[in-house]
Image 1 (cartoon, one colour):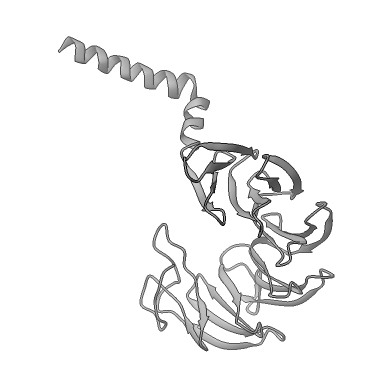
Image 2 (cartoon, helix red, strand yellow):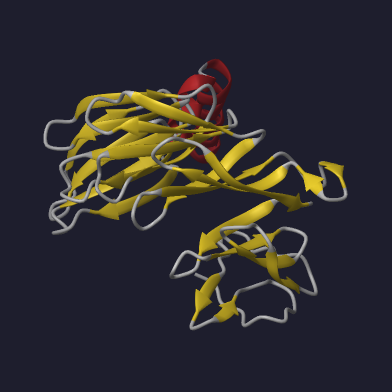
Length: 285
C-alpha cells in the first residue's frame, strides 16, 4: 500500500512540475501530437504531414522513417505537392506561404502576407502561385522567383480562392461576419471573380447576408454555385452576377462536427448536403 501511495505522489508531483513549472514544454508536447493533415506523393514513396506545432514532415512511405522536418513559425494550415513532386507548397498562421524542395528540405521561397494565410494553390501550369489570407487579400506570385505580381484586394478575410481551368480567371469568397450588411442588398460577405492576368475585378456578388460557406464553377464555368450558413443555396450567372436559382434549406447549412460540407453540380442537377431536412439530396464528403 505504501508503495502505491508513493508512486501516486511521485506521479502527481511529476505532472505538477511539467505543467506548472515548465508549461512551455507541456504545450510543445501537446502541439506536436496535433496533425492537421497528411498526403502521399505520387508513387507513395513519401508521406507529407503538417501540424499545429509549425512543422511539415516528410516520411519514408515504406519504413515510416522521418526524412526531413520543414519549419514554419506557427501552425501549418495546409500543404500540397507540385505536379512532378519536386516542390512542396505550404501555408501557415505565421502569415506566410512557403515553397520547399523535398529532395533536400531546402526552403526555396517565402511569400508574405500581413495575417494568417488560409490557403495557397499553384496555377494549372505551375508558373504562378495564388495565396489568400485573413488580411483581406489574395495575391498572385511568380512560382520560380516568388515575385509578387499583383494583389486582389477584398474588404474582408479571404476564405477561399481558386483558378479556373485555363488560369484566366480567379474565383474567391470573403467573409466579414454574420449579417454584416450595408443595406438589404449589399453585404460584406462576397463572391468575387478576377482577371488572372491583370488582377482586375470582373464581378462582385455582394447580396449574401450570411457567411459564404463555399462557391464553385459549373463544368463550363458559365455559372457559380454558392451556399451560405443561413441555409440559402444559389446559382449565379458567372458573367453578369444575376441570380438564376435560389433554394432554401429547412435548416441552416451546417455540418456535423469534424466533417466538411460541400455542394456540387451533377448532370445539371444541384446536389448538396445538410445536417437538417433539405430540399436537396444529402451527402457528405
